[in-house]
Image (cartoon, helix red, strand yellow):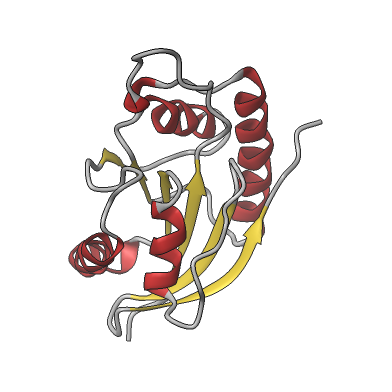
Length: 169
């Protein structure tokens, strides 16, 4: 039996509002959004230490600018062994397809992967939590909020543990 995998589904920090014809994919974090992410990253770094983990084994990031900036800020505080950009985890991504891909990826990578984070957007993050733990209804995610789940890669099941929200100083 494989060891459970801890999954942290992270919504990007607050983004700057859309301006004119500027596309959604290129909206950057606001200054407050950067502070939110730093606070969440600080919390997650400390929590990983409590879990006897020295790093995230895998960080999966949306290609949108604000998600990539969020990942960059997280990497300042947390060691990341492997990172990949995934075009399927944008705001309108399909949670069922990503869930299937994630479980297959975890099975492929094997027992060395114990801590995984996904940085993405509403409403996708909400639907992904509900897809992984079918007892949970889609929920509102605060910016820079972190949903913690435990995944059983063999059974293709997840269990929602909690939503962590760290407020900037």
